[in-house]
Image (cartoon, rainbow, N blue to C red):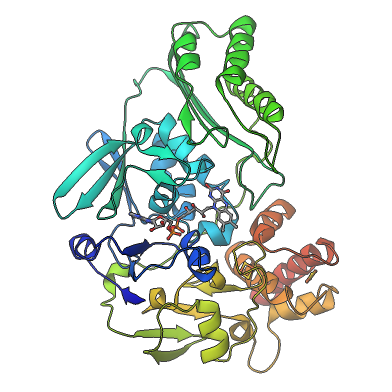
Amino acid sequence: MAYFRPSTPSSAVALLNGKARIIAGGTDLAVRIEKGVFKPEDIVDITYLPLRYVRENGDNIEIGALTNMSQIASDDLLWRTFPLLPKAASQIAAPPIRNRATIGGNIVNASPAADSVAALIALDAQVKLLSGSGERIVALTDFFTGPGKCVRRDDELLTEVIIKKTHKPDTRVISHFHKMGQRKAQVISIVAMACLTELDEAGRVLKSRIGIASVAPVPFRAYEVEKFLEGSVLNDETIEKAAKMVSEAIKPIDDVRGKASYRKHVAGAFLKRHLTDSEEGRAGIASFKTPYNEKAHAEFAPSGGICVTVNGEKYNYNGNMNVRLLDFLRDELLFTGAKNGCGEGECGACTVLLDGVPVNACMILTGGVDGREITTIEGIMEGSDPGNVQKSFVDAGAVQCGFCIPGFEMTAHHLVENVKNPSREQIREALSGNLCRCTGYEKIFEAVELASERKNTDEK
Ligand SMILES: Cc1cc2nc3c(=O)[nH]c(=O)nc-3n(C[C@H](O)[C@H](O)[C@H](O)COP(=O)(O)OP(=O)(O)OC[C@H]3O[C@@H](n4cnc5c(N)ncnc54)[C@H](O)[C@@H]3O)c2cc1C
Ligand code: FES
Ligand code: FES
């Protein structure tokens, strides 16, 4: 399997010969390659392309395909213009996945349960596709053709998402992203609903947009319900009728995550909640947005091999670029603190810091870390002694097993270093991508609080 790292969109497109697979954040693809589900002849790693931005261009907001969910969840321009999208992004998976998962990957993966897509279709978003024969723009509502299928051709690179600003200045706009899952984080939605309603001063609906995921083969818009709502005044009767209509409009299936009848009920309840503008759905808006400080990759000139800094020391590597970062760290560099738990982004045992933010090393290919800085559990020690977080875990009795704790400590280290006096809610949110299967989380939360207190005392 050849590994390519183009540095411009046109050189990336020139490599798309039908046998190559694009890799972006790798949160969907790396696992499938590891499990042998996909066996591409070539891998085109696009992480070095300059497609990581959110910008205003006239009446449009443009989002580069490589912009990840953490970036979207904490982007001021998006919160001011289209809060629905950051609301959705902040409910995807858990912080380490959000630090990698790109918007382009979430779209092209074409999952019926793609959360960002529910929001994007409600915002009438379009995508820009680049190939050797030029560029084309496709409305996202026309993009999906079935589970895992879309109109993107093998020779096309999705470069940008475009959202047009259409709200009139003197209208009230309410938008909610409601997600129901079996737990608060790391879950595929049972139902995800993105709603936007524009109202005039009299409370009459000027515009209604309802995007729903996880209830059909592709995310879709509830056009009939939107049509019913537009022009009506929101009162109990209208709201009840709209909720009933949306339950009837969706055609979900029974699966391991939920029964069709339950999904219909939840969809109705979500719309009702939106139209009465009450509290956010069960998952709520993430209270802790991971500070995003990943470097701009475009500044690196990718060579044949990689040069990576691990725990402050530079390493050159010219071997297999397709091995997982986790295996590279453990087997090549002998940093064995990061563990291979699930191998698919679920448990956090493999957590390391990449340019300062927590990521799952089991989902990253080594070719993608050229010029970057990695910190493993070995790198947060103070000389040959345990570091603050490590000592606090021992003192609080939180070292419950040797397998998951390094991952917990990496995430806790990042939190304590970036957030002063984190609340319980912030600690829960930050650690939501780290699973304990043996004991529970209480001692771990206490250890993080202790580490934070000790850091504050040291700083005085
Ligand atoms: C534990 C876990 C929890 C998750 N939870 C959620 C969740 O709650 N909600 C949700 O919506 N998703 C969730 N996901 C799915 C996943 O994180 C997203 O789909 C992610 O956004 C994919 O982006 P990526 O950059 O990692 O894509 P990759 O894995 O790199 O690529 C995905 C696919 O898109 C193609 N591709 C990527 N970028 C481009 C491009 N620019 N142009 C053309 N093709 C491209 C690749 O070839 C590949 O086929 C979860 C995943 C995991 C592992
Ligand atoms: S998340 Fe990487 S091993 Fe479980
Ligand atoms: S800490 Fe490892 S299973 Fe609980």
